[in-house]
Image (cartoon, rainbow, N blue to C red; front, side):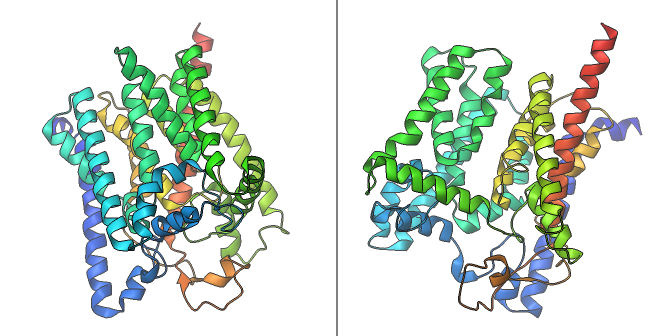
Length: 419
């Protein structure tokens, strides 16, 4: 038994279970290909509802900004920093879509590889551990979904990682640049701002002010190059963002609000009129307060990172599957931590539920596309598959956020009583 514990550590166990789920998923895909059409194969919680819609997060964002009027004409809710990020791809897409996407894949692949080697260098990872972590990342549901959609979130993720890798650098220039990296991430997706908690915990007030200032400048500056004027674009952007936040996306939304919405759907309840929506909102904001307090008092880096990542997943609505990619920041710190307790195996199980690509089937029945998007007038025969995975990912994210927060608060109370 001691030999088992010695050689089968958390990293190995995490790796074995994650690989097993991925292998079962591949077998499942092959089985589906043999017995059904490619459309059915793609009708699940990792891939999107329509094979013709693949990579459209990439193409659509480029199209939104193509005429410099993404908010007035296209009703986009993407922050304007995405215009700066997508600009070279947008120019190429104007002539041909495919080369634009190829360039995007090359650039984000090089970006991820660069982040990977910077991480290995900073934490002095062994070759074995580095390979295992990379494989777990590449076979995960959020990564696969992000690639299938061609989502620009990969850029946000990379800049967030760059910040976390460099904010404590001894080199003054690199440390200053780290605040710019965070600002780019915040300006592109807003919610990475929560990772500034590392500066708050260290009481680096001036650095926090710098990061906030850079974020505000980079967020609002691109509005100046849009048509229709600065003020109008800001107002319409905020209206679009509010509209997007109220949209219903049962099949790919892992937020707390959607978790309750799915349960309401399963039991045939009206989410709004039954009071479920109010209850979900109260729970969500109570959890948010608990997470913020726990983050500040956490004495384990992986727990701080987990709560920061989950704040950007379980609280906003909708939160797409690919937003779970931020959980990998916590997973890395989790498997890299030497000391482990029994409860850590529960956390590991929750992490695996969050990232597994294995499909466990539909919940009752697929949800009609038009039922989730009532503002779409035409009848769409396609379905967005509401799978067990979506509910499991939402529940596991909620459970991880709650359990980690409570454990930190209880430990804080315990230490206070001792003193």
